[in-house]
Image (cartoon, rainbow, N blue to C red; front, side):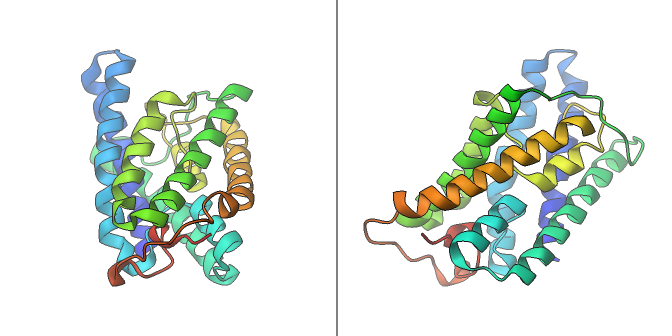
Length: 230
């Protein structure tokens, strides 16, 4: 429930702020993207802090799959997490549309195809995982804030605007709004995201293996982004 609700709220923020930003920006895409970025970057640390003690606050199949690869997170539990994340993400899209009086389910026409954007998604997902693993090594209390910051940065430095999340990608294909992604672009994004998980699982255990590890607090001592181990 925590994974589903947390992911739903995350997507409601992403889609809802995209709708609001586009309406207020009067056609200025840069201003709309800035509004979308600020809302997402502000909400992510809060959601992680709220739901982290309950489920670990993955909100992201890519993070869950990394746990499976690096920490032996049970596959059965991972499957339940991923299902909850996808259902929650779709629910968040519906919630955002309902708040703004739009059709609850739509088909996005926002094309985000191309090799360049796939590379952007690979970089965004790998950077997110590096942030989680790296902050966990030295300062796990900073992980929620670091995640919000790196996603905010990814909105601007990656060609894909940093979805970095298969569940969010699927849900945003159901919104023909500023935050949407055309269904035809979804497979390429998810392939890039999963490829980043595979590379991260192979590389980050070695990269972050040296030096003492700072233990997370008891409140975060669960299978969460703040507890990723090499």
